[in-house]
Image: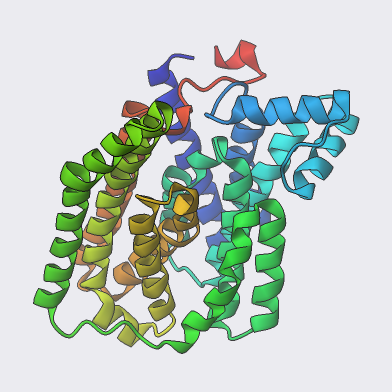
Length: 361
């Protein structure tokens, strides 16, 4: 498959999956929901050499099962890996298990959060969040389980929240630090009284980031170069990369915060979503200097951006404005996928390669 053919294949698969899930949910045909969920699961499970960390996972799988050396990963990886080796004599089942956890738990989370526009939200999940599971599959499985866990924040069920967050941490250790986030339900709504203040705040953040790129990072990395050239290059690249990825998130957050008053008035539970998005921006700022915490923002940003967008569309009237926001969200998701993954090769999911080589090459 060429890269362009892969692009068409991904988009067609995601659109078909979302359409089947929508049709099955609307008409209560579970078989269509199952088929719709199965499409992205099979896409991920049957891949070969697709995704930045694919080779690392296969290496860990082979070393564990053929040499008996346990990888420095969660016990769940070792369990899934051994099960895959026994039942399929390879890593295909391992990939399918992680893909199934990622897709199914996110879908269950959308249902539990009572999303009305299920096709929109599930499609946005497929084009913004799911492609990264072809790379960092352990973490994205944990993201989906944590997303489902947050439904118990809105329902005020702390024991179930703790249970599913702990389950998420067995898939990726990073999720354990999210246990205290249940307390965000006690904070109350995000209050935006003065839009000029919000605008000034975000301009200050962007100015700070530009200052970091133009002044602080070059000076710091120059000093580090005197000590360790490799560390210098790594820090400079990671800092610049963190800033580039954070700027669009700040823009999205600013646009969503402008809707906070109306959305929270109609749907009080969304105050939790706004706080989690703001927390992800704070984590993103810190990750410029402390790269090890960067991926924590994956748990908090896009899942709740999707939920807020869905609530914004609900409150829009008349219908032509509702349609504008709906199709605008779809277009934004498509642009995000094409730019980030197809043009910039993020996660290295192009070209797509499958064990069914005769059908996909």
